[in-house]
Amino acid sequence: MSTTLVAAAGSLRGAVPTESFETPGTKDFWWPLIGSDTNSFTFTRPALIWILSCILICWFFLSATKNLQLVPSKRQWLTEQAYGFVRNTMGQDIIGSKNFKPFIPLLLSLFTVILLNNIAGVIPFVQYPTTGRIAFPIVLTAIVYVVYHVTAVRHKGGFGKYLGSLTPPGLPGWLKPIMFVLEFLTYFVIRPLTLALRLFGNMMAGHLMLLVFILGGEYLLLHGDNPFINVSGAFSFLFAILMMFFELLIEFLQAFIFTLLTAIYLADAVSDSH
Amino acid sequence: MLSIVKASGGEVGWPEKLPLLPQPGEMIAGLIFFAIVYWLMKTKIVPRMEQMYAERTAAIEGGMEQAEQAQKEAEQAKSQYEAQLADARAEAARIREDARSQGAQIIAEMRDQAGAESDRIIDSAHKQTEAERQQAQVELRGHVGRLSTDLAGKIVGESLEDETRQRGIVERFLADLEAGDVKPQKVGSADEGA
Image 1 (spheres, each protein chain N blue to C red):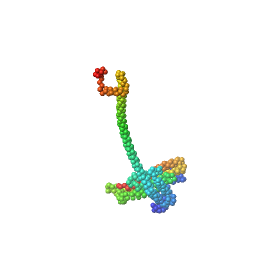
Image 2: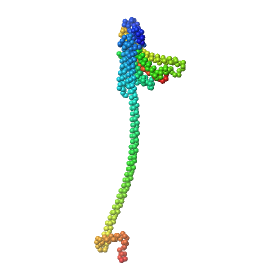
Image 3: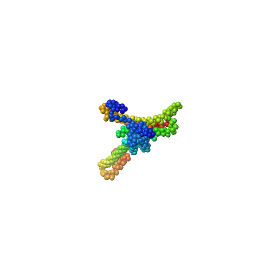
Image 4: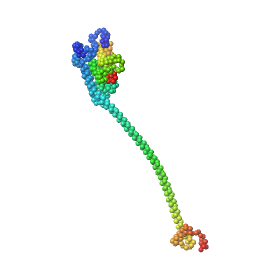
């Protein structure tokens, strides 16, 4: 998008700008702090943000739950709202009131960590959605993957029975292998892939779009020698601000969806049939 | 993953790699710190919140129980009060009834007393009258005696003024008169019979 914009700008001016615009891309997500570009264990800025966000979450919940009252204070009320949202909406309602309790810590950790790291994309001076780096969604998905398979195997009494429960009962014999392959792919390949890629894709694409509009706008505004181009740059900025609010919504929504899907997979794992 | 990095031989750094390749450093940081968050949630935060929820539920249920008990007590007190009120009303009615009957009794007694009093007054009046009558009779007898002796004295010419004789004669005469021994006679006829 930005390349076409720049191309249009270039054609309007009738000349290639001397200081050419560098299109923002996935390489802009690489931001090393300690280490070289080629080192696999370089300490990067997203890792720092992730660490800080985890510390912030721990501090917030620890201090908020230190002195819990039956009649809540303002801060406790806020904590209770967040906790109750995860516990009741995603835990109790989906997993079922019989089995949801052991999964509250996981769901709560997932929701808070993802939410804070998503919102980091619009927090001033941080402005980096950590979950837009594939490493983090993969870690979270791996954890969820292990948890829901282990839960299912335990709940259904063995790996063989778990595989057997993948196909619904009462299916005609010739349909069983087909269904089994489909269900197996769903449970073992598609679910983790989509879970990780959905979060990563949304966050990266959203942030990339913001980068394009902001960097492109800046270039058009400051480096364009045509008033029309400058005005377009200003509009690009305005649109970036609008997109920022839209991003905020998506960031919340993605955290919600990730946790909700985890709850749904867990509900599947602890359900008695199928 | 590491093999990919090594295979690319450092020519292609992380900035140029596919965005779908996770960087191991980030993965390790992500895993460790997510684990810390999870551990804290599991050991501290969730138990605390659940305990608070349980306590709150207990408190609310306890409060409801207390309210129910208070209501029961209030109802009991109300019924007690109403019973007392009914008792008081009955007693008041009884007292009124008593007073009425007592009043009637008093009136009847007074009426009796008044009747007795009037009888007594009448009786004493009778007695007084009788006494006065007797007194008058006695007086009259005295007068009649004196008058008759005076008269007889004048007629006989003999002074009958001697007190004892005089009284004795009159008394005897009056007693004879009352006994019916004295027959009325003409003055002349007695002389004729003698």
